Image 1 (tube, rainbow, N blue to C red):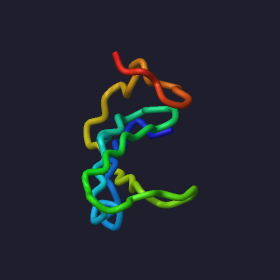
Image 2 (image 1 turned 135 degrees about the vertical axis):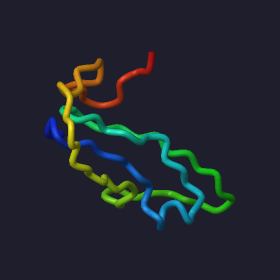
Image 3 (image 1 turned 60 degrees about the vertical axis):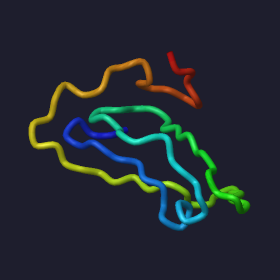
Image 4 (image 1 turned 180 degrees about the vertical axis):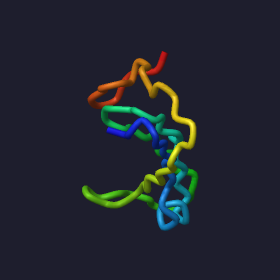
Length: 85
């Protein structure tokens, strides 16, 4: 769960990005609860396989000065991948 006064950004780790992998996920809203999902796209010409427990994404947290009511959208309390609209 992300506190209501914090937001986050997901970034591909540089070691993964150097293999031609792009991350298709970014913002994590203040107050979000649930499982974060990501979309990885391989744009390189060499193998970029990942093994279980490989670290591929980093979460950067930011304190929000003027926090809002927090996230209450359709992904709140999600488990697993949720189909896009």
